[in-house]
Length: 67
Image (cartoon, rainbow, N blue to C red; front, side, top):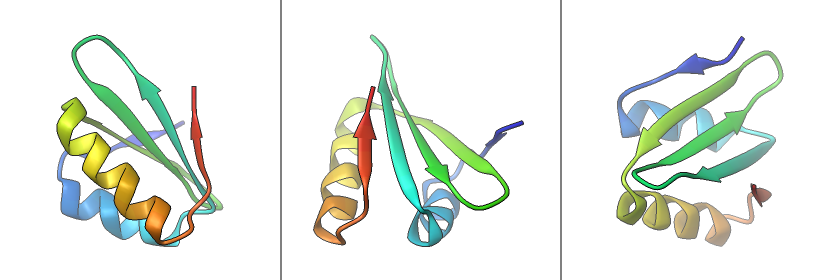
């Protein structure tokens, strides 16, 4: 069962340790998913913040999959 977080800073802690980051785009928001060994941590953010986070983790050479 995934765990949803509501603070970007908290999600970043999980994303730093994540094996991969998944991105699912909807009309009103973007759902970012950080896959760790035991849990999948998700957050819903506006598209502009999501693009900043995606670019940040691409520069850190994290594996990012968009669906």
